[in-house]
Image 1 (cartoon, rainbow, N blue to C red):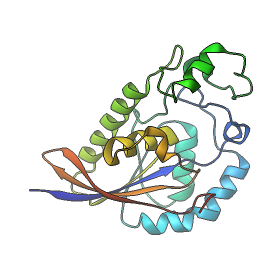
Image 2 (image 1 turned 30 degrees about the vertical axis):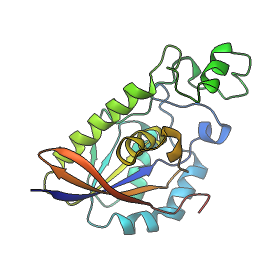
Image 3 (image 1 turned 60 degrees about the vertical axis):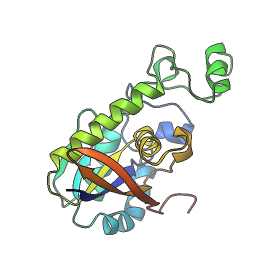
Length: 204
């Protein structure tokens, strides 16, 4: 018997590193900025509307947890410790300009972002890790028909590319935006049905 689930993926609010264009993965636990808080408050009505009745999950890093707390201030929030951003390795905390003289960075760019980050994580390993987190969340949520997950841009790209196909980078999303996904779940196996954008990002 198939159970239909609606999973809503929401990217965390802006941080100062986001504003500076720096690579910020699991090695940097920066909280959202004041501008990021204002942006969340401006957009949370739309997000709350699409998440009505959902069980709420977030990752353990400050930027995800703070975003979840600002949006779902009157709701119980579950923390999934494994739901963290990719490990950018030696690129952590640096911008493209700061890496312009690093040959490894140019090799990564020329690979269309498919090479493993130096002393970091590969996209394939990260995708597998993120999908494991999604499966655990769906299992933990039990009979809930709607699940909202506040996480990182990389997590969203990993899940969307695994479920809906296409390139990992096809699913780049602005802060406080994301995707609403319809899934079928049978014997803990997840299969994709369809998705739409939440539609409250900077380019919508």
